[in-house]
Image (cartoon, rainbow, N blue to C red):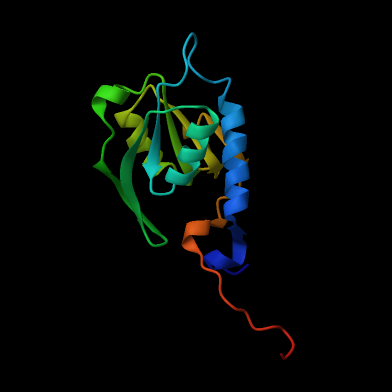
Length: 166
């Protein structure tokens, strides 16, 4: 077996598909809110979690939205995650009643850092890979560990030559 390049075992996600999957995530989360209360805030893990977090916040009518910025990738190479920006501590506290949203959990290294910062938060991702799945409370779609997900913000439309002449 040969090693594949990321595009050779790729899962291409369009804006429409991301919207449908983020809405499905919201449907799963509607009954997960803390007992006797609604979610008090959504925290998006930037940058990938921003679009799904916005959709989830809209669908669940959550008005308080903040971000936590974690850098763990340099293009397609994963490194040690570091928090670049934390959410408002007066809003999120230790995470109780807070919903953390990201596009994907891959190895789980980013979520380890986020969960350490907000240990009582509920973590939700649209997509999950096996290595990081245990760090997520709620997700929509699981893909294999060796699948590279191409998100719509990473792609551009361009002309493609036909297989047989023009």
